[in-house]
Image (cartoon, rainbow, N blue to C red):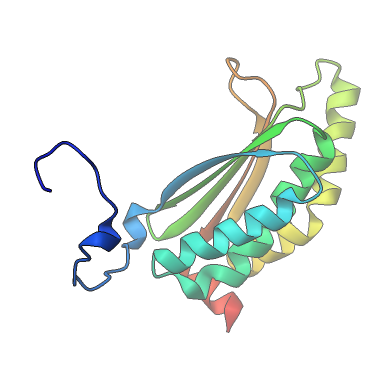
Length: 164
């Protein structure tokens, strides 16, 4: 009974309200995922679901490819640890950020080799982002958390054109 302090299932007294999809501007999600073999598939499915819920289905092809490439790269560099995926929608663009625990090298030769290896691994990402007239990069995470930050910005118009 209402007011008795017990929370009951909504199925016991269903509402007849129509479903209204979320707006793109409310797209702000963060996920901690294991750096395992199945994680890129999980990240792709998360991305599809989030874009569908926020009425951005035409961005799906480019976004899923970008998330897959970034997630795969992070899992290669930090196997067995956690990675952090962030999806945000700002200024008509999907912002994808991925953090991993791979430390920034202090030796300049190692740092350069590591960045080159990541850039080569992200060649397909570069092509997708270029086709969408977006931007991407790799850098140090904050001094507080350490590790590496990778990011990509997919403008809505470019991502929708990519799908066409």
